[in-house]
Length: 444
Image (cartoon, one colour):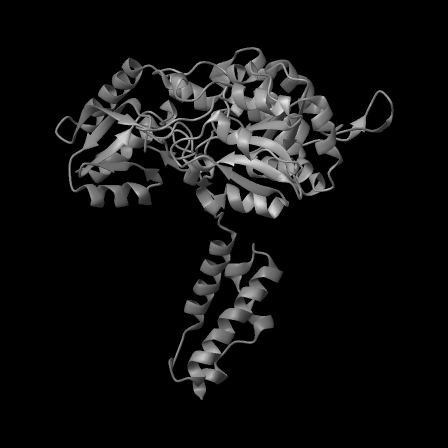
């Protein structure tokens, strides 16, 4: 076939001027794949002819497509601050800049400079975290699921951990407490009913093989109506009487009191610690507003045992996580909450959001949109079913078309009651101009 004979020789083809500034090795790999695809199509009589110019263009496009980043920034106009699909907590550039001084250099990650010998990587955040939380010791692992797994594997492997049926949760990614307990080697002992668990239920469950009484934060759902749960202080007291470990998986821990009465839904870490729990754990990238991490805090004796577990080697965090987390904790210690974007966005007053929205509406055109008051959620498995106020731009037009078009511009809005909204609650002010520009283009 003539088309087969016209297929270029690879060594000559890759010298084309279009590839002059590209990596020869990568161009060769892509060109070989493209030429082989052409060969198969010709033999299968799916293709009768081709041009070298088209092949050059195809290789050139494939080269740049391959090197285009898969991860890219998006503008969150959904109103959901802790949007799991979009990376949860933002990191303030000032936090990142400070951390970069360590991340981009050799460091004392596991080097005790004073003693001139190997050090412990967890020491870098433990000093600041223990000061912030007022606990004996802390340990940081790669996420809160790892924290739960490590605690159960260390203290309840082959023994029972008592948990309320109403707290056997499943969160995103099919992470289920019963499965985690099973994989950790702990034996699940369910107590109570789905809607009611009393202190007596925990007490009746205790036997010679019980190792732990555990309380789990209910992520993504609430139990309303005819319901009852046992306060943690009662679980703690019961565990103490029987010489057992008490453990509270908070899921999402936070420091300052939250606005909009949200702190009545979930207690701040300080309130939980008033009950002197043996161990607690929470996520670093939820309401705490930092990087993905699982933070375990409590009694030093127990933290020391966690550090001796060989599984810790697989669950440990790297210098990037530790550096950013340390800077976030320092911001908390100085009460510089403006450096924690999660809190900054949540605490922004509704009047400020309204003023920004009105400015944007005037710039876009009052005939194209209007400003509305609405409600939003925190997201990320925190504060389930608890709404708080926000301000949004309602852009006029077919909601599904607008949502799709804005999404192509890397702006993710939301549809509410058949209306497309640009919600300002999770929208950083530096993105307002981009919203205006895109709205003018789309809403003509």
